[in-house]
Length: 125
Image (cartoon, rainbow, N blue to C red; front, side, top):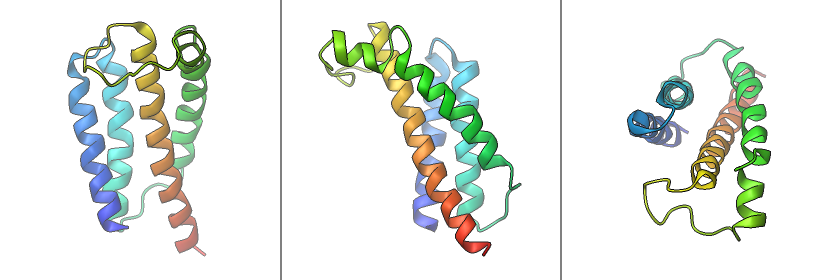
């Protein structure tokens, strides 16, 4: 799990750094720094406040659901834009590209946080 967590800590840190030119960096930099911190602490086998994971889930799950059903969200991208590539270019030229990428970023965060939370729960028993 150390390699997993150090790897994702670096990945999330890079994701946070790449947000400087995003339309809403003040929102997305902290969103990516949150799991960076959790992964870094998990890699070092340091205990974090037991409420940090549930707080993250409470914040990220509803936001991911919102991004899925938003006017230009993932459902819109799939239904009306035939799930065209959102990775052809780094520039988000259409709103559904930006919204879909943000949704998948949240999904990655939630998957990693879930894996770590399960590991922490196993270790505390």
